[in-house]
Structure formats: structure tokens, C-alpha cells
Image 1: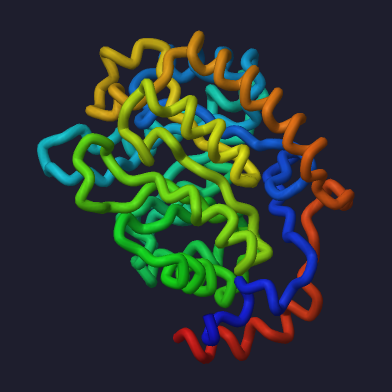
Image 2: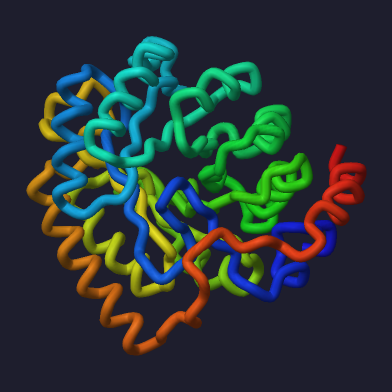
Length: 300
């Protein structure tokens, strides 16, 4: 980690809190982002938005641009999908999170989304990282499917070096020889990243396993490992999802059960290993503006 200047702990002894509206990653509360893999219809998004809000989720996710391995798979509804997502979030009173897939899309997606997501296939898209760094939107950065933790932190460094310190890291499973699960969810990444970085860390057990029955146990394991939050795929009718990711999506009833158990475990973990009491607001990294110029020159 010798080349990292902004993402590593040596530059900030205090845990960074990333604010998204009234939502705070890295604070005293477990943050849960939930929603479908892809935006399909306005009715779908409204139903899911209301349902996850009632269960206690704090942010709504949904993909309007979907990078797919197969070029014939559903690729998303683009700006129409962004509009549906934004409307559903407003109706439910939730900030919205969605993926941006190209540098030229950043201004458009930023008009509708409260938080930009960089997916696993784009973790090393350096021009996209730079564009998100120049944006005014917090970023959810997913670990590449074959990326080391050092590579994940260096991707975060690109965003931060170009002016955006509001980065949340996401462990979403890595590619291994195992074929039973879609990916291998590397929960050791959570405490490891907590040692290495001051940035918040969330876990995606939906992509990490690819199997609906495994989402809840791995979500609870992530909470026990010290994650700051979860991102869960939820669909009101997952067996009829427009994407193949329906097999890893929870329905609203299962999501409500998961939320109840995750909150109970979170409270227990705070009693066993309480977090330091910190102000529930985004922290300011000392002398960030002074260091950012040097870091940008190194990384450009």
C-alpha cells in the first residue's frame, strides 16, 4: 500500500463517514441499500421502494445501465430507468443508488442519483474513476471480481485524488475455482480493509453468492465481521425478474426477515464490540486539499 496517499489509514486516524443526504456510512447505524438488479417498470420500482422502506432499508438501488456478459441480455432502460428510479425514491423518501458505466454518463446519472455505483467490471476503468472523482456525488465502489485489496484501494485512490473523498468500498465476491456459488464472498476482506483504510466498507451477499438461500446467512456473517452496511437485491416477484439475477434476489417478505435479524445482530455486536462514539456527520480529512494535488500528479 506504499503508493496510496488518501485511502489508507496513515492519512486519517479517524473513521471517515460518507454522507448521502441524511444517510451516513461508517457511523453508528447499519446502512442497508436494497432494490432490484434492474429497473423494469415504474410500478415495480414503486412497490419495491415502499416495501423496503417499510422493512427499514435506508436507500433504494436499481440499475438503469446494465453491463452484461452476454450482449443479448437485457441492458437496462437508460435514462428512462433513471427517471423511474428517481421517482420511486422520492415517493418512498429514500436516496437512490445506481451504477454508472461510462465517463460520459456521469453528468446524466448524477442528475438523478444520490450515489454513484461503480460495478465490478469497471473497478479498473480509470477514466470512469477519474470522472466520478470530478463529480459531486458520493461513490459506492465495488471490488473487481479478480481484484486484490490493494487494487481496490488504488481504485478508490483514483477517485479521491481527483477531488472526491466520499467513497464507500463494497466487497461483492471474487472469482475462484468454486462453481456452486456465483462468486466466493471474501468476508475476510471486511476486517482486513478495516485495518488498511478509514473508508466505510459494505458487503453485497447477493452477488457474492448468487443464491437466494445463502443471502441471509452471509449478510448476517458480514454484520458479524464488522461491515458498515449491506447491499441486498430485492424484487417483489424475483422469479419473473427481467434479468438472470432474480435467482439471487429476495422477495419483500424474506427481506423483512433479514432486516429484523440483521438489526438484532447489529445491536448485539455493538454491545460486544461497541464502536467509538463519533459525530454522525461526514468527517473532513485533515489537509485533504493540500495532499490531493500531489496524489493526482502521481496517479495521472
